[in-house]
Picture 1 (cartoon, rainbow, N blue to C red):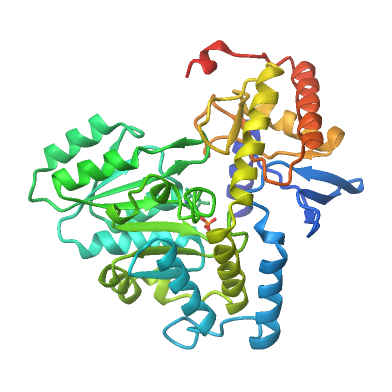
Picture 2 (picture 1 turned 120 degrees about the vertical axis):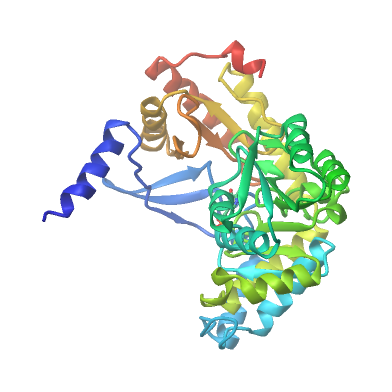
Length: 409
Ligand SMILES: *Cc1c(COP(=O)(O)O)cnc(C)c1O
């Protein structure tokens, strides 16, 4: 049997649909974010990164790098085991206390990634609730979808941020049925924000538990970086908040925060927590340093919003099809996978600008886009250069400027 042919056929399907993915081999330069070196097929080249989820550049902050180096030097690299065996080290315990405090919750629990925290967190919570019905937003991240699947209980999908639909489903489920509402606070492909206060109102009215993914908001929103729930004053009304240490905090890892008993139950029952080696202590110290810094420093948050607003204004003024977004995400509509990939290639090869194409299945077919993420460190000169380069690419590929239908969205 020729097993390879199955895999080459699978790859060919992706090539045919023009969505085979190619990675850029980059080397970031700490202290010069967002500048990086691209190890291109033709040798090394300097490029500017415009699509990083290290939204605030904390991955290169001297306090964060310093904490990582200091801890690794002091205690070594790996955790040396699962938390149950030998992997609970003081920097992990400190980080969990920091996270519980960030979200005003009794406890928090670390996982090796945000993906794992959603997958095993949602599945474990829902499994422990007898006859649970999960109500999941239609645009939830794959890690949440996998968590819902693994829970094995009934689930219903409500139309994205559609409160009338959610209410209908809550009423239909009846008052006695346990219900878990799962959503994100900030959807990072369109840059829209969920109506968290209204979700809490409905959850309270119909007796549902709430689980909110704040991955794209922690560090960036709220006076202490607690996320959209903190900004909107509803943090105490949400049962479980989930976040990542890998985006605005610039490190790696994920977590959930909530009531002590809820968190302790996940700690005690979640396979994705129990059976995998704990995060390296040095990563935890670095994350703690980033969180502590962003609890008191507003400079990064304010400058981040200022830069995002400027990018939107300049690209809009140039007639580029910026999709409306109320947040730091700047999606630029392309509408087909081939042009999206071509635009990305030309930007990198000819303009030294790195923006990875966003194609199906990350977004719906026909809504392929370039997703631009300005950081506090993208200055006016870089923004002007981006606009000029994009205009040239748009002209070259014959892409339309200013789509009215999108402006009205
Ligand atoms: C990135 C992402 C995750 C996963 O977080 P990682 O720490 O990168 O594993 C979870 N939810 C959403 C909405 C994300 O975008």
